[in-house]
Length: 425
Image 1 (cartoon, rainbow, N blue to C red):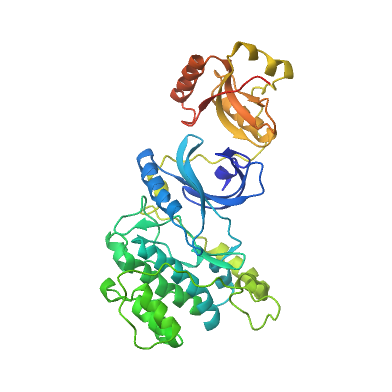
Image 2 (image 1 turned 60 degrees about the horizontal axis):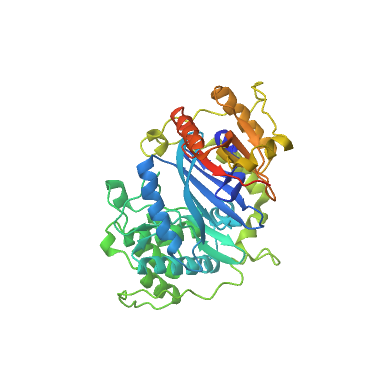
């Protein structure tokens, strides 16, 4: 967590990193805000090797081209560097809550389960009509935005294509994945069966489906089949959820029509006012306290066999204590900002961009200690609503700026160091 917190305030392609939402190994999720706008989002950052980054961005580009009311909307994606480590990032809508939060407190009722499952099935049916696999259907990826239920999109894959990096597996994952098989449409059906089981019992074990009520027992039984060929299709699950005991064969083309948006979901009989499942946790404050103690006691350990961090350069922990005194960061005066503008030599070599000057100065001091032969300073462009840039060269010719950029990269500075020209002001 500490490694990622140092980047709060940084701006990446117009998105300011506001706070860290969660981290796991080489991945982190930030709450972000678009510059000069009230628009918010969630940015997932994934540290990878260069070749893997390109593959991941291709997969996210496919996700960006999809559109369905029950899938998170993609707001942007690209590559960046974090202390010299290359990363791919994906920005989506910022969710209000996820189903996992509610299930930590209690299991859902039959009615609540149906109101969550219908939009999830609509999203998966749409994906399968495009021959896309979600690959990570589980409560933490079933999200709420207002009154809408949506699925995450960061794990989407074309059918038969493997993920860029190995992920930890659990009861939500189909058994064929353990033998190295690429995800297929039936893989999602197993996860849907596990989701139904967990929603109603807080457990994902296949043997519990016999105890589930009505249609849910059939859905879990035909979803949690060891043989992928014996699993129901998403359309058959939808049909059983509507009630018929005799199911039609799965049509060749899946309808992309989404069910009517829900007004409210997961009514809680004991809470007459708040019926949305996002607020169900209110009913169990005491239980959550006990749960927090329990979770802290059994904090999950990362598995070296599947954790992509094992294939990445180790990230040094960040010292959050008061920084050691470093070379002073020179603040550029107004006369200095004006100097040389008439000459046309207004090229700068930029290392990072921050919304707050304090964050930029902290970064500049760290860089000055690490690369003392470079003149690191904070610069504010002569533009409206200026950002705070950490630069290592200013008022240069274009050729000189490109040469300095090359020398900085050769010295180990981030690969995303760039040159930029500012006009006089």
